Image (tube, rainbow, N blue to C red):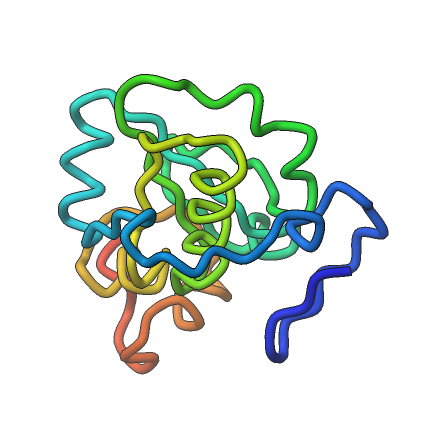
Length: 151
């Protein structure tokens, strides 16, 4: 089981990121800001969400493909090998690890990490799909409605 501080991944899968070595060379991971990721996706780049099921159920970026980190061994072969692929999670930590691991193990150099994850995306005023309850969880301001909300 792969654990991040305060966020256990309970999948029981042997195909989790724990089986892929952590990446040390920072140069292997290209980070982009949410606005840059938005432009890449607008230009046709796939958007991959590596968060787990409860997080996906709470909120997601429209058009994202859900490919949880815990099942990386099942889906990494489905990723395009040409053109950019934007990868994100909640704050960019897990997606950074996924991008780095796939660059190290499989030589995938077309993956980019969206720095700050869906939290930064929402803070930039970019659209998300969320239940009304979680809009304030995703919105760093907390007391203001999310820009995508109707209230």
